[in-house]
Length: 225
Length: 225
DNA sequence: CCAAAAGTGTTCCGTCTACACCCATGG
DNA sequence: CCATGGGTGTAGACGGAACACTTTTGG
Image (cartoon, rainbow over all chains, first blue to last red):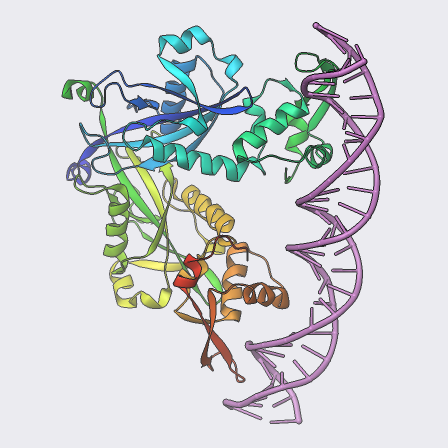
């Protein structure tokens, strides 16, 4: 029985994290300089090898936790990448995962300790190996899903203004959105809940803060924004 | 350098093929009884281990070719599945691929030699391990993409009637479509080309045969059907 | 001659888009 | 008092959905 498996060869499997954040009205990506060979010094996603005692998604969550100290983060598999020579050193198949985090939740000292930086997605440098390809696929998925899944809230604090929410959509879709039309659509969604709190940081007049209501959303069948 | 990799462990990596076909107005899936332990006798997708000298997609194409004798088939990665105990024998991470083939292109003798059968998707039995999950994800992707990508033609012969095309959409989406609206939309798509050939098999009156024109499609930016 | 599938347009309704001005306040 | 971002409604265009009858011909 084990003989059946024995005929075949094993390979290294790693996970790579595509970590998106949102700040200053820009979609950002967390990347760092590789600190190991091969590819030392090149810009790269943050990743790690899959261990025997963990599933792929567990590995991805562990790697993200190691990097950010954050748990229970939105993560989605982007896909497996398995070109023979994608890793110049050894045969390594990798599974890319996309995570959405709120940049304010990420301790900046921890970030520096790991030597990673927030880079504007539209100014992304050339990355190690096939990492650009992974990012591209992640962005495509994100764009496709942002309109029908409640992803944007993962990039924002718990309370946010409608203008902030709109900026997230604009950053992800790469186009400007009409303010009145956007707010009209939001108004139709019960699970985007207006609070009595007011944000006075970004405007003198102040803006109402909204909240994503998970319970309300659970009752929702489908939405478009 | 190799020491860096040496700290980590390797795992078996396989590919599994989710092969869709279309026949008798039904979407069908190719499955067979497992001929090996663990899980001998259970319904299962057809798969194989990834070799050292091939990429993931090459492995998937090889496995599909072994099974069907078909090459240059539409194939799309569905995702990686990596639960620790998903394979009862050894740790195996698998990457699922979805293929769309025309059932008439598949030699029936070859099918029997491999001991696989076409099963209606809506009558799918319980499959080995996490294979049902893979199929579910593949179907979800298929439904999402059928409206914006020219997938349906992979399931049909080169020449097809509009009724056949409509049946493909109905089978994939699991709902009936209004004939006049459907044909109105098709008429708006230049890359679905009317030929002078007439099919007399399915109706006494006869129906015009159409063809998917790849060159026309290449000039298309986006479509909806 | 009739059963069975092919083929064909119009109307209605809801949704999306474009668009401009007043409000509140801190400095 | 003015610069800055917050907040609001309407009209017209467009696209999607509903809907029924005529045509052809093999058996």
